[in-house]
Length: 113
Image (cartoon, rainbow, N blue to C red):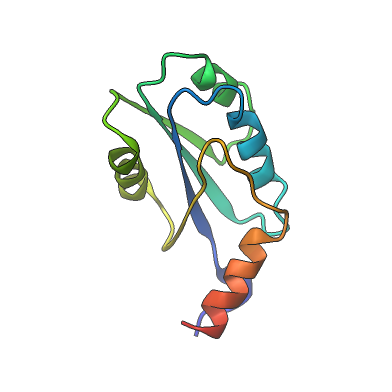
């Protein structure tokens, strides 16, 4: 049985020309009530400065993968391949989570394995 305190997440964030929003998205991850995660940002050939914004957020849990533009599905799949944890969550670069999002996911996974 999976205890709630042992659940960790790989969070995959595809990034393509979302410089205006990517910092807000990543900050919403870093502000989660659950802090056991890694963030995998897959830069899908962006031509804006979104990549620089990601590299300027200093948190050892953030990994950046660069690839030529191949579309959001390929970017998500690349993030899944790089994931270290069993539980994978997706966040779009122009979206954000409320602080208890991962906690709610933990409760759901525990309740409905």
